[in-house]
Image (tube, rainbow, N blue to C red; front, side, top):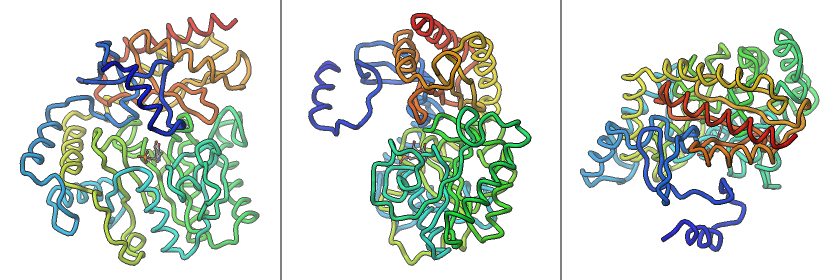
Length: 433
Ligand code: PLP
């Protein structure tokens, strides 16, 4: 079967709004390390790591063996009504790593479910369905998480079960905090929070949900320390802080294990997903015991924390620790970021190269403006693919190239991908003018 047949069948049976990258979508049939191969035998260096999901890389022996060991026992899934050793072990490790004292862990299958559960815990604990969220955020595709998502194009539902008041994001190009001197950005954001609380809420707010660096929103980072400044205000109202670490967790930012640590404060709840299963469906909430315990028995999540995904999760944590991948993300990410900045400094089409560690973005605009150029961004994406490199796209306007490669990316691979990306940006940008 060719990928063409598959595309026609995909279009006939899956909803048309499901995004597929590239004019000729790719069918991947194998992977190894940081490289994947399509049905036509073309190999690509994967700078997007699936969608930041292949955090260790493809076909990594230690992870494959841990999963295979579990599968061979015959217990792929039984029930969370029984004890599952690797689930308990993983929960203990994540609770310890979270930095939240006496934490509890609830496993789910996706980031959406994790955030849905976190919002459920917070709103129950506080007995309020009013929440705060951030413009340009993305938290998932259920009613509550879409409701907390600050971008209409990703939050189709008119039936938001929560009342949401919106805070400004840390965008340096547009919005309240744009172009303010670094020293003033936190004060402006705190003033925004105070004003939103006073003017757009009834006072009994349950929580603020925020990403330490906005992922789907285009790797937009608020100023370091903002969560701590926010939390001072939140604490004075008893409002809980949920850090959505679906993209920022596990050392990806290079400088810390969690994104929230750049903000100098510990959240009440933290949600995780994507990389922890290295492709296996594994996600969850870790947080304050009194908050997680506040809901009536919500039964269980049938597949949440199942033996196979938690076997993968423990193997991923072992691998991260044994290979110090956080340090690798910092070192290799710096090569990539410095190289990108140097190679695009003279290009008016590049508004910003931003991010931390191996979570890096390039924002593409019309020359000399901050007007997004999604068409050029798509052409760059196609040119990268033609050159053998996969990158992601994102941002409110679809004009941000995103890189979230496996944290095992080597320096040579970083340089190889960098050359392809720079060539693609320069070629496509010069064809524009
Ligand atoms: N939260 C963030 C920050 C995300 O980036 C995503 C997915 O991209 C989600 C939540 C939703 O996760 P999932 O797609 O696993 O439901």
